[in-house]
Image (cartoon, rainbow, N blue to C red):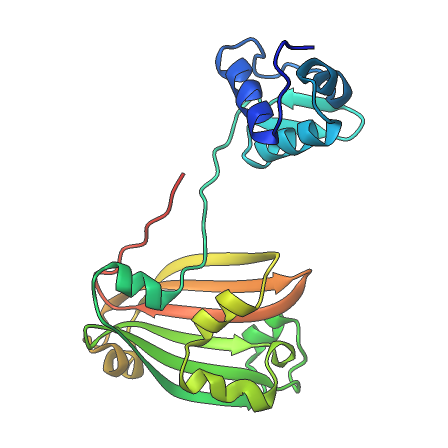
Length: 233
């Protein structure tokens, strides 16, 4: 046991990282099991488990049932992606935010959406189209399909005042999802809504989120020219 007990999983994680970085535990090495580490660090086994799992999630450890935990041979650092509230994103740039609901209707979805949402072609899904502006200029077009389970028909009027982006981020938790990035040429409709030239290249984010594998929403965000995405690693 160490002279000073480790009181938190963060302190255990810091020590494990120190051993990896100092090459005391080299890539591919099998590290001591949770029980032995808990005894050495003078803490609960659950504390060690959380620290090791967090490092495994970051790609620094390789944990396998019945095979133990090894230092990753080829560590993979993962980018952290969060779903921003567009209103806050614009405010953080020092610009005045604006929002306009263009359309909100419950309709049968096209095939690509029913496949993503895992709904039948005859099942009606809420289709919401809105525009976000910064200092009075178009910023992003939000084209969203929303599983009616998460918002009742009576509550849909909320989107007259608040964007589905902001409402979902603050009210509906998700457990998993997919994100795609691409570029597209602006159609006549998109050019009019985003005040750009028809055929102009625009940045697109397509995102689907789920709660325990049940679809919540699928959204296509089409940004005005000059948009730049930022994340952390």
